[in-house]
Amino acid sequence: MRAGVLVALGLFAAPALAADTKTAPPTIDPQATQVLKRMSDYLASLPSFKVDAQSVDEKVTTDGQKLQFLADTRVAVERPNKMRADRLGPVANVVFRYDGKQFSVYGNRTGYYAQVPAPPTLDAAIDAARAKYGIDAPAADLYLSHSYAELMADVKGARYIGLEPVNGVFCHHLAFQGTDTDWQIWIQDGPQPLPRRYVITTKDVVAKPQFQVAFSNWQPNAPLDAQEFVFVPPPDAKRIPWVPPGKFQSAR
Image 1 (cartoon, rainbow, N blue to C red):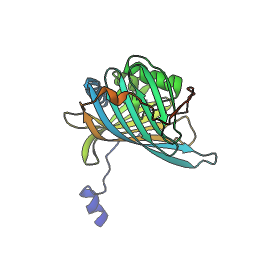
Image 2 (cartoon, rainbow, N blue to C red; image 1 turned 90 degrees about the vertical axis):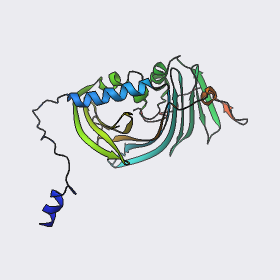
Image 3 (cartoon, rainbow, N blue to C red; image 1 turned 30 degrees about the vertical axis):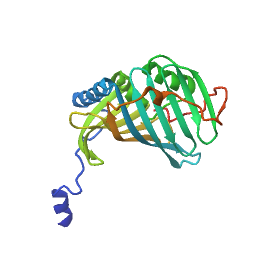
Image 4 (cartoon, rainbow, N blue to C red; image 1 turned 120 degrees about the vertical axis):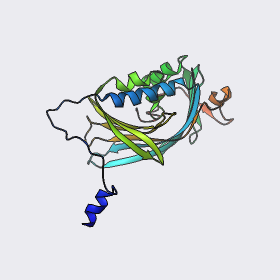
């Protein structure tokens, strides 16, 4: 009786979801795509922003155990061609700068840095940094001016789950299905449709590891100085030839 009362009060109730079947093909819920498009358009309209990203990257050991690696990254973007990311993680304490002309990566622990020419626009720079140099800020696809098209490129199914609180902020919970990955995103309700949480599940890898990002301290239209994106080597820093250092952040 007590359990029934608690459920009736909604204390333990979960959102009701339609039962999945193996034969039912995935469908695209227009409500989900509309909320995602609104977020994409809003972020693309911002001339600048700052945000803190707390990421969790799962790796699977040879004996099948999942290990989670955490990192904190402070990101700043100024359109059309500037970006910086300062990452503190278990492997690297890394500074990344894109000033519209070149990429600079500096290891705070090692004292080494490297620089290479970069494309003149943010979208092209994000793609080049990932494809050519193995550098990726957390969930960088969300920062593209065409993020909706990029996110929807492989989507086979889309579902609107409902409104849920993320750190006290009500967000639209959306779920998407792709060929090799499924992903979910929580987008802030109201006039500023900012992403607050983002989860990617890799389906073509044993144990289906996840990559998660929690966004906080959003500052839309943040005042930024051009010098914030220029890397000035510390006096004792040593320049080395650019060798792809592995993923600056998981390729998500």
